[in-house]
Length: 258
Image 1 (tube, rainbow, N blue to C red):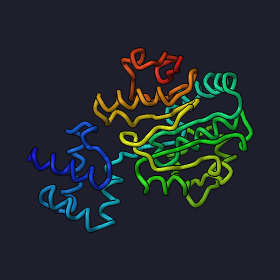
Image 2 (image 1 turned 30 degrees about the horizontal axis):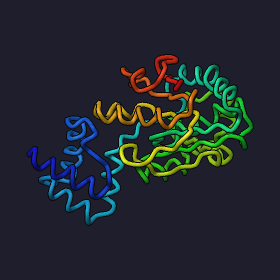
Image 3 (image 1 turned 90 degrees about the vertical axis):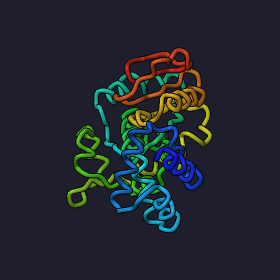
């Protein structure tokens, strides 16, 4: 069975360039086995054969594999720190043309939250967010910009009233916010990272990766930032060797590059 899974990891990498070896194996294998059982398929080899011939099942697999749990202004106190401390510091150090990357952006909640947070400090036409994710289907949802009431419950009331239209029981982000975000497919484990960023936001994603993969990504984030740039991570994460990587710690979830 172990050999079977090794074959599966290689086959998936050849098909998708997603390296399952970089994810915590027990956790990831359990997710994949659940999906295989759902389709009543026996063995990884048969599942790979299905993925190669059925586009719908292939896209379902990629979406299932790339764990997408997201919401606007997740952990509001951390966004309050961004508003009161981080954004003013970035504007002071770099001026108004900030280069901001929302990595592993999922359904767009995070980059759209960033635009709204920045709108308290800058005109919208001066805001641009670069947002990436490995999953094309999720990026399509992000571009659509339609969310449940639960997804937007932490958005400050004034921003929710200003930047969302209520459509039935859902909330649709307005085009003036959507137009400030550029979405692109990107694999954190394989693709080149953008350079000279002032702020990188990557939250509650790397917990699913092995320690080696996490360290590699954090090092690349550090290289991707300009001096005095800032990394914002999630409440489920920490960088234990941040000094060795090249960061200073601002608080529990923010690290800057000296």
